[in-house]
Image 1 (cartoon, rainbow, N blue to C red):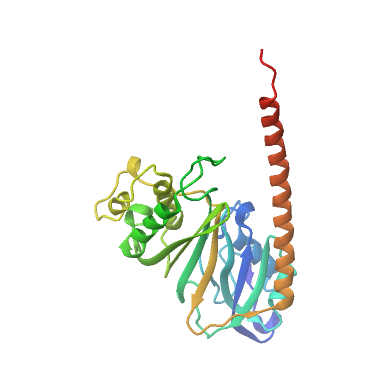
Image 2: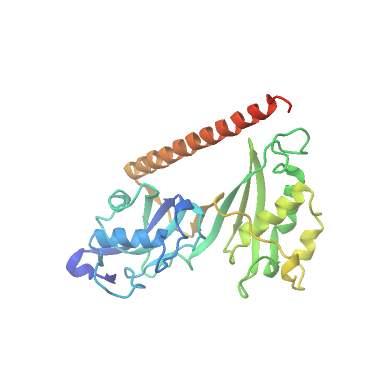
Amino acid sequence: MTPVSDATATGQARTRAYRVAYDGREYAGFQRQPHAETVEGTLLRALAAHGLLDRGDGPTHATPPGYAAAGRTDAGVSAVAQTVAFEAPEWLTPRAFNGQLPGSIRVWAAADVRDGFHATHDATRRTYRYHLYAPGGGAADGVADRGYAVDDDRVRAALTRFSGEHDFHNLTSDETGTVRDLTATATREGDLLVVEIAADGFPRALVRRLVAAARAVGRGTTDVERIERLLAPEPISGQFGVGPAPSAPLVLWDVEYDGVSFGVDTEAAASAREAFGERHRDARLAAAVTGAIRDRIADSEANREPP
């Protein structure tokens, strides 16, 4: 895809930032890849369908003038406030943008921004939320999913150790940009412990590794003091490192910019609520079916005649 001149194809253009929500479970991440379905690739195809990018055989890296995105979420990671910005015609409202997008991706708000605005570099704060399945809360006495239960207080103690400015080089594969000042908290919501982590930016897989380390402390498989070793200047060899938690429960929750106020497109937001509501109902139905199968097998085992 190659850019199409705004003067000839779209009329008056201005730099605009868009809030994008997506269910990342069916995508190989945000950033375009040559042979995989990605969120960014889907957004650019939508712009091509709107006539804002040439559908020809141009370079695969071509994007609209001024294009940038707030972050490159990994495969399976979702978002409610991913932000993309570029020179867009006045008619490209969130509602119009959605006309060429699947239900798994919805644009729901927008803001006019200054010329030269960069969605990546101008972000002042990014917030992620990880929905950790941890039924029962507190100690694991008597809960059905004992292997998933955590001690909430121990998780919060670990997150407190991570909060503040540290060099997180032992929790990412990146070699630069590893010093970050972050805040990390956890809130109990039923069977979920929602871990919220915010910073000005994140090196690769840091959020999921932080969650994995805090989860290990919460399950009692490691001590809170282990956090100090992870934050120490000395590198940790691979076999003693922390692998990332699964990606599907992670959501890019918010991205902040100084002086930028996003206006919600009410029709686009309603469309987003409906689209994600349908996906939520489908997921609940799938959970009900698999739960019924599990329970039926459990009942058969309990009522089995002895040999």
